[in-house]
Structures are given as C-alpha cells and as structure tokens.
Image (cartoon, rainbow, N blue to C red; front, side, top):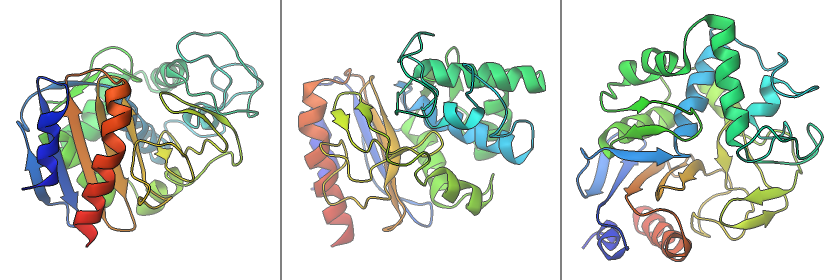
Length: 271
C-alpha cells in the first residue's frame, strides 16, 4: 500500500497527494486530483513564479524601490522588507530580519500592476496558468493567499519547477538559493529559526528544525505550505516533488502528521 494512503487518516474530509518525478510524470497519487482547494500561502509559489517571469521580461527589476523606505522588489520577494505578517505595520528595519509577510507580496502585486498596467491575476493567468495548461487555477484576491487550484494543476506546476520551460534554469536556480543570508525569523507554525532561509518567494528547507518536510530532505529542498492544510515541496537533488492538499486548516495535526509523512515518502521513493 502506498504511503500516500496515510492521508486518509488525517482529520480532513477531503485530501489528495501526488508525487512527480524528474521527467515531470506522476509516479503516485491518492485522492481526487480534480477537486479544487483553497491554497492559502501555497499561492505564493504561483505568484513568485509570475514575478520571476516579469523579471525576465524586464517588466520589473530586483533593484526597483517597492514597499517601505529603503526596500526593493528584492527585499519583498525574500521577506526582508520589514512588514508585519498581515498589515502595513513596519516591524523591523529593511534587511535586518526575515519577516514572513502576506503584505509584502501584495505590495509586489501592486508594483507589478503599476509598472505594466496588468493585474496580478491576469499576469499569472497569461504567463503561468495558460502556458502550463492549469485550467482550474486562479488567483482571485491576494496574491499571497487567495489562490485556488487542483492537485492535477499543481502537479503540472511542480513538473515546471523540476524542468523549467517558462523561465531559464539559471533564473529558477537563483530564486531557490538563499537570499539575504544568516537572517533569523519566525517560520509560521514552527517557531523561531536561525537562520530562517528563503529564496525569492520560495521557502528553503536549509537547516530548519522543526520543519514540515522530513529530516531526510536535502537542505536544498524548496516549496511552501499553507494555512488551508496544503503543501508543495521540490527536492532538486532527488528530482522529486510532492503536492498535498486538504480541506483541514493547518494546526497541530499537521505539525504531527506532515514531517513523518514526508520523511517516509522520500525514503520510499529513494530506496
């Protein structure tokens, strides 16, 4: 029996999990891959990829001012602009801490629209969703947390993260390395991390402990989880990715379940 069947024991009414390999193929799945789920902060992965395309198209640049005084697109993407989690309150000086922020991403969307005249939702649809055939995916509201999608669509996106076609591999590699190194901060749900490493919109596993991926995941593993009980991780060393969606909000159940689940899954896939 597949390890993915463990999701049936989780305290959610609906759950689905899909594993994608380095060729972009689904190697295992469990649950209804066509059901639409709210993504919460997994939305940031879709938005980050949209911003990377905009950077390659030179619609925006990392050095442009955006956000509070002294902040740039670079700071906002890497959660170092100083914003509070979900308000415009400034919690720290730019570049001094890692302050995970929905507001920072929303400011990026405003900046992109100001520079291009195209809304974030339309830019994401035209630049990411339509080219990848993600017909059930939308961002209606905040680009930080209001995405909706299916496991089938996100499997296509995970395949893109393993084998980029919409951006250069060098661009993705740069976005999934640590930016603004050695900054401490809070990883929501898992407490203070020092360092709390992030790339350009992508959370990097690095040396974080505790963490929602397994202890056996390489430090280079990147992805995101969401408060709606969702996660997507990519392991670039083993060339694997996993998309898991539930309708149970993140809580202690997820802290208890996700780490051993991901650890067992990776062990099985790499044995």
